[in-house]
Amino acid sequence: MADYHRILSYLYRYDKNDKKECRGFVKAEQKRSGLKLTIQIEDDRLMEDMNLDLCFYQKKDNSWEMWKMDQLAAENHQKETTLFYPSERLPDDFDIRRLYGILFLYRDSFFYGSVWIGDEIPIAALMENHGSEPEFSDNSEQGPESPEQDLIPQENPEEQLEEKSEE
Image (cartoon, rainbow, N blue to C red; front, top):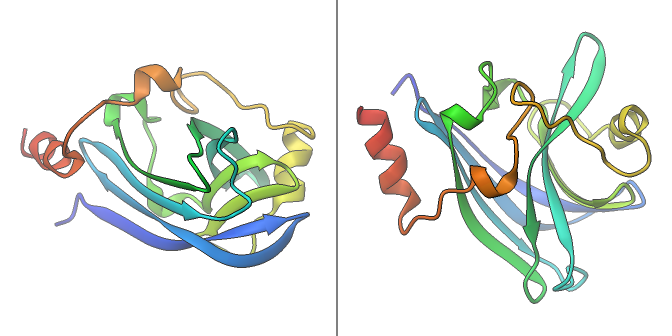
């Protein structure tokens, strides 16, 4: 299937920019209809009141950039969810094969991440471009306009991804 791309990767906890142990996984599936993310994080340090910024990062024109896709709330030391973002909410040139990885950012010194291209997450360079606390572009070319509009509540994300691709 030429219009289907999938990345399955482990998520590692980073503490003070040091890569720690594996704490979960992320599966990203992209079709013409949109992006489906399956996320699982289990960690005793993940508190219930923590909000994690779901961010993608990439290198463009010899400069690192990061943009926020959503914000997720932790639940009792874990986060397990499946999210679907329709293609209309993704940048026109969005392609998971060109992204360097994904971050679940709490602070610049504590986050979860997965590298898809390259060796390590360039967190210092990403934060340097965005300050010590993450600030992200909110225009429609860089990412979703607002998380509330982007999440589509659904019973079975698999069916929605398949149905939209058949249209």
